[in-house]
Length: 357
Image (tube, rainbow, N blue to C red):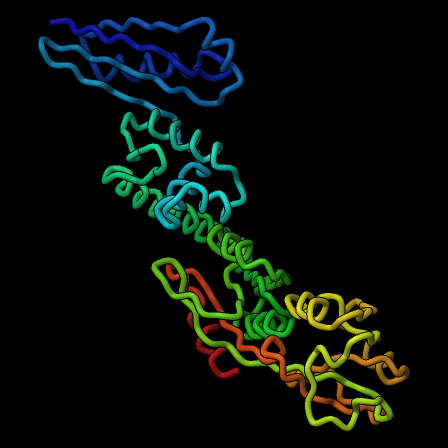
């Protein structure tokens, strides 16, 4: 008995090697089978630069018809989008969180449906939502992405590459503190931090394993993220002893209107708060350095107000200054360490040490 399989090469790679590979593979799998290949010239020309083949096979045997959909791969970015649709619920929200456009997401999902040969969404005039098949596909996308990250991490470890730790934080103090703690716990670790007050960016980077931990101003505990309280921090304003407000027991930022301040340039969310809540203020920013830090010297030698944290340890209050506590809620905050739930065990020792801070 001879079967006939009709194959249409919709997309094909730069050479005919991919097509020949499928010919050989199918010939080995189906004996006594005739293959008819149909390659539309316009499709071949339009997609000559594509690096994968999508081959649809119709296998007819008596009254039974089998559809075989062979695809070289599904791009990782499509899997990330699908997982994000499950997490956030709407395409518009996915676009906001991942920094892409809704039409781009729609095209990617349509491409995935074409690859799978399955409808993944219930579409109405004003709403698009995953159907049961879509939820199942999204579950697998999450598993694949997790395995991909695990593969990268374990392979690097096997090759003898150093363990890496990157933290993104909304403020400088928790970032430097957790980095120093990680370096003590894991000798030889490559540890670094970034300061960014954009929470959406931090969460996206954590999801993509750009950061292994982030520090926010509130906890997040759900299926994807795990958080724990880190520490609290309060700021005071350092004023010359002869300043008009130096004898006050406490101040609000608005009381400091019109002042010129000297401060570090990488303080995170504090920067925006000060600019918004101190009317007509000016700020002279000093680059933070691990060695030869000039800010303490500048503060001690000028009459310009500055700020000091109750957790500052690298310099003490100059003799010609007083520290007046600030009562604004934004100046008295609690930080939370957030990591991916599926990676929490990797950093268990660090998280336990951070509880002591």
